[in-house]
Image 1 (spheres, rainbow, N blue to C red):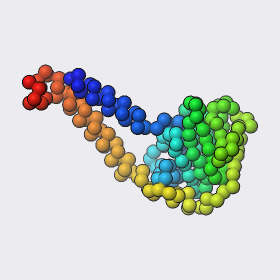
Image 2: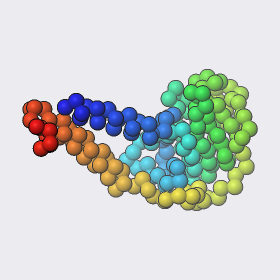
Image 3: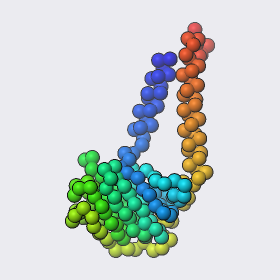
Image 4: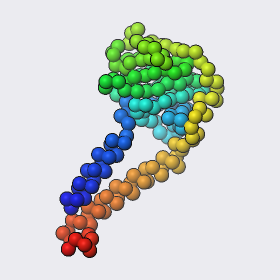
Length: 184
């Protein structure tokens, strides 16, 4: 029983270490690209955004809501990357434009490519030149359509199966009988 508990603890620590730090969520009325994969948000109201994620929009914009409630709306045909620096989210606009609504002037560090673009107040807009053409943002570098309903279902089923196996291992060892012929 003790070895099962240790195994489960190691599994949780390992899986947590492999995941990037979530900095907020994305909501969108239509398809967008996240980490190079086209996302169709139908039926999924929000998507997690983690440090290092690159977001590209096509015909519709997306809204990123950070953990403190600050919001940045990436305009259509825009591209940005979200990072972390010293515990503060960083929004790096790479192409086109974005509107922001911050809870404080220091809630999110904002950059236009590599140049700091500090907020001029709690709400505002900043922009760069737009070289992304309609239709190009969705196909920019990656596996189009990876997060389909089928892929999402497979991930959820796999996670459920792993949890069921872990529960079965714990239950199997609860009555004191050995679970292995070598442990008698």
